[in-house]
Length: 373
Image (cartoon, rainbow, N blue to C red; front, side):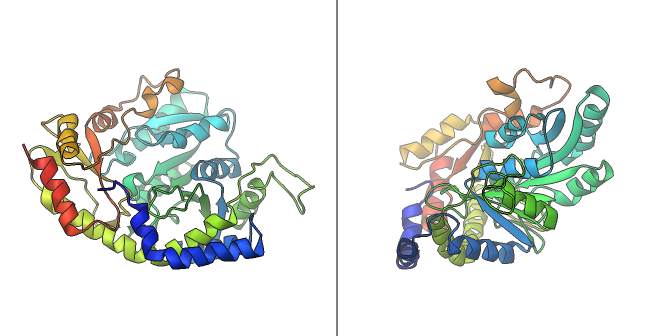
């Protein structure tokens, strides 16, 4: 059994993807070719935003978002401590300081209950200029943007949505990628919508931001490539990856439907089991289920993972070490913050196989392996 079965997905769209790639090879426009513009248009239509600017990867997408907002030396950005390293890394790359925040115990996303206290702490106990909140749609479920945006507006802060795992998620009918001033995503192959290499995108309804982001992704160029008007990046999505993504986007809605069916079955099988806490999807929220992540309760996760391994079923741990515990960030003054929920999640969470080509029988087999003594 595969943790993420990209081969099975390819077999579903092989003819169409091969045809798309052949078309790129025929026209030879390998960087910012016509498929890139076509993809940006289709992504904007799907998410429901005015502007989509593709780029080389999801990490660059985050950095482009921060650069567009003018985040730099002396600034601070609030970011979850329980997330992938890139979310905090790009803040430091701009010269700003990441301010870590604890997690919600049910959704694993940023703790909205601790957000105002974190903001006040930065304002009263540091000389940093707090500029933005970066929320992460962890494991596929959108963060609590109705409350995050309300708090951000109250304190005159910008919001960045890191939807690297969340593409396809929803709050009501509104889709991930549309909840913040700027949103980003990743097309890393293992993501819900992934290409065959690296890729990313930024999303916004702000015309000025869109113009800046298009400039930043190509070395900060102005009217032509020899008129550079700002410092930028070399971060373009190559045309072959755009061609792959166009065909994957075409089948994405049916894949997303199947992901939710699988998650529902997993949750039913794990419901009320003493060793396991199943993930919680908030009422009115839809997850893209980038990962299906359990919490071990009264049995160590290594034991539960070994049970699966004994049945040749792969599992994975995301993320075993919180950001505030990472060597590179240990020098940051975070002693006044409580990260107990995030630390607890990091010690107990583990993820199961999740992709649209699992059968119901596969799901039941996975669950039985975890629950068997």
